[in-house]
Length: 260
Image (tube, rainbow, N blue to C red; front, side, top):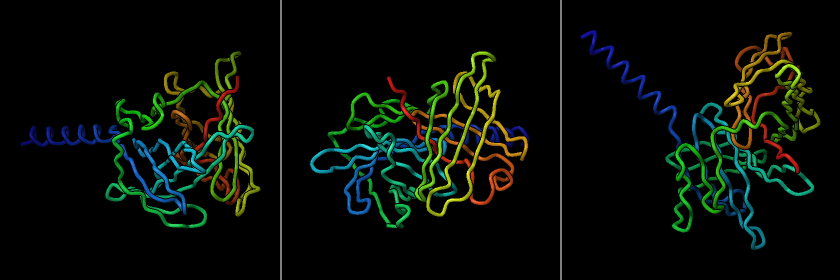
C-alpha cells in the first residue's frame, strides 16, 4: 500500500512537471476598438509571446506581443518599432483565455473585446517549432521562450503613461554586470520615481536570468529574459519601502534593438 501511494505521488509530480513545461498555441480574430485584428500567440509558464496583425489603409501592420499572467488575467503589450520614433506601444490589453477565446478590455479606456478562435489555411503553422512561436504570415520570424543577449537596453511603458528604462551592461574588468532601472513619474496617475542601481550581478551564463536585491530596503526580485522582452517579478519585500507610494519596477520591459 505504501509503495503504491509513493508511486501515485511520483506520477502526479511528473504530470505537473510536464504540464508546467507545455506550450499552448492560439490564433484569434476579432475587433480591438473599431479595428479588425488577427492575433497569434504562444503561452508557456504564464508568459505570452506572438503578434497582432491589422490592416490599415490597405497595408498589413504587425505588432509584436509580450504578455505576463497576473492572477487569472494576462497583462499584454503590443508594440511596433517605428523609424524615428523607436518602440511605440499600440495596445495595452488586460484579458483572460476563456474557452479558448481571448476576452478582456483595452486599457485605459476600458473597452471590452472578445477575440474568437480563428483558422487560416493560408497561414504557416505557429507551432511548427516545438516550444517556440512561429509567425503565421512572416516566414522565418520566430520567438523563443528565452532571449539572453548579454545585456543591453529595455524600455517600460504602461497604459497610464508611466515610462521607464532598464540597462544591463557588462563590465569586463570584473566579468560582472551593472543593472540600472529608472521609472519616470510624469504619466497620468503615476507615483514617485523608482530608481535602481546594482553592481556585481552575475547572470546565468546560458539564460541570462538572475535574482538580486536592494539591500537597503530588503526587496528581492527576479529578472528573466525572453526573445524580445524581459520580465521583472517581485519575490519579497515591499516596493513602498524602496520607491515610495505608487512606484515599482515589476512588469514587462521591451528590448531596444541594437543599431548598426
